[in-house]
Image 1 (cartoon, rainbow, N blue to C red):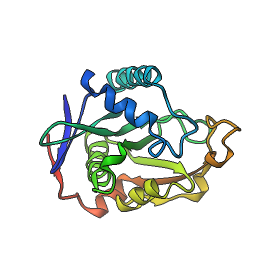
Image 2 (tube, helix red, strand yellow; image 1 turned 30 degrees about the vertical axis):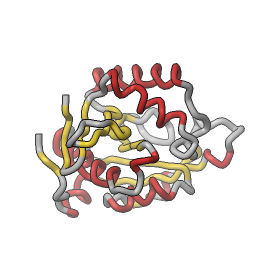
Image 3 (cartoon, one colour; image 1 turned 180 degrees about the vertical axis):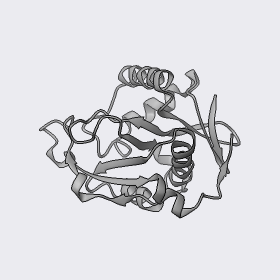
Image 4 (cartoon, rainbow, N blue to C red; image 1 turned 90 degrees about the vertical axis):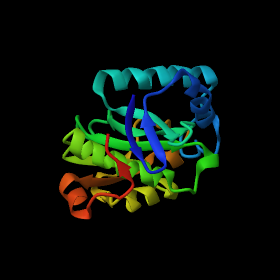
Length: 194
């Protein structure tokens, strides 16, 4: 099932043939620079099964991100309910992404994220969407800024699932955008409605 399309991209359900790309991302030291560990192929397959289960159960989650013309997977992107109480209240929805390094610096994440914000506000009726990253993950925070999210320092937090062995990865900054802020920006021009 295709969730949505942009000029260059498709956000869709996962296919079995996407597993190698998913594993590549989760094992790449560049992609996983701001995560406590990389995953083996078996761990990646287990995680992909969990991602698919959450999508089935909630209609939210991290979907495959593919090139529109070829359907080649390049990463993942989506909206998901957070599980970080008391730092983020129950019901908070985050936008998140991960992209194979060879597809970086082409504007794909920004393009897909703008489309996903629209999907979240229009199709799911969300009042707010947040995103968070390790404090010095400037690649991700730059995307957050480009899509109109604003930093909310009062909501920064120490990530409870980052082990004490990686203290440099604990502090997370939070960005947010409300439905009203998104409406005030106007819709992006790169979205094809489905």
